[in-house]
Length: 144
Image (tube, rainbow, N blue to C red; front, side, top):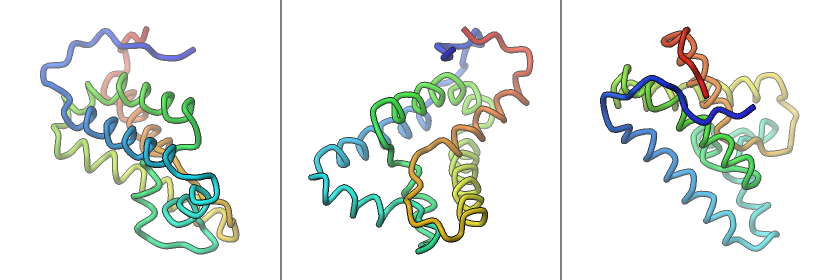
């Protein structure tokens, strides 16, 4: 089952959540514009590759996705759970939390699979952090 929305009304406009969604969509369109061979090079350069680790990829990999469903699923979960979390934390704390969650997820990937040559991409680690925080802040929220 996929979450469509929650029943908690937001008090503010979720500017950070919308901006993150737009940045992910823009990065996806860059991926789509690349020829297949160039896309592989691009993902190796900007995804987290534990065997050839470059720290900046902990951030860049969060904006890359492997397909429409990967992107759409991550952004749907971000939209449903990120809006109210951003509302409660404030924009600055929310963006920091989101990015730190994604960086930690990428670092765990590097530490647990140090010899992996395949790039890890996607916002799933950051989205998982958002979902976890949402469950802590809104334990009785009704998700539709």
